[in-house]
Length: 343
Image: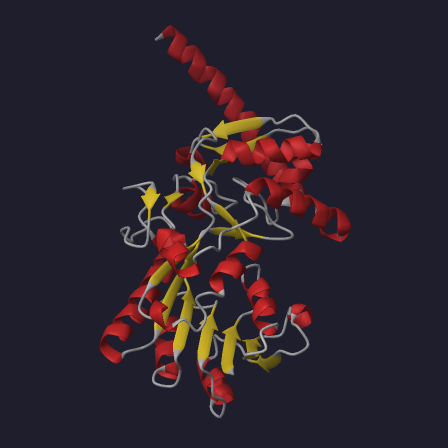
């Protein structure tokens, strides 16, 4: 029986993985986190309460415990990665680090695989993850640290879907559409995107757990079905039975938003087209492929939200911000059209 420790375990990406591994009779599963969302944990999971940001406390907490595999969802930078190497080096068979596709330099190519160049100059989040990757890979080379790196694309689940410009939650955009309002889309809505449902991610991810051939390797665990942002919003509008009213605003403008960090979320991520070569992961999982495309995923989201109306949280501040931005942008657009006509 393999002793597996998940650090995190209750987030959008990690919850389905926790539930799948808990069903495996050959795995003894433990989860370490602060205990804030543990109502989603299966009853047979051992809970270890600790704040991963308090390294000394985590070290004391795990001092007398032994694990074969560690899956870490909460490493954000080189410091956290180095602490993991210190804590688990020489003690485990495999350490799986969840990184992100955002670490790649998306400006040089839209055709991406595990060998694509790392370097995102716009996203602090991506820069931290890239630095962590380097620490782990260096430790693999110099200390034989048993690292496997997994890079998800945008992963969504029950109460969230892939969207362009949104508030704190996705319902902020759905609410505008239901009110027959316009919604802001970056660019022209035609950049190519890749999104993965958390259930698909989990089913692919567990093939990596305990697989020795993945040590020292990087895997893109994504749904490689390409779709544009317009396709996402149009399907959402169709399901809501409303008219799709997009307002296309250049990322060069949106990235200067003061209230929302669009410089990182749009300029540093969603602006760029992503077309993935997933052959490396497919060789590992053989016949396993994602089964939930964005259309089905959006349908599942709306059904879940209807079953949980308490999650339909209105965001008046975001709504007002959109109204103001759209009003000012339409004035600028009309003036620019006149200038072009007269030029």
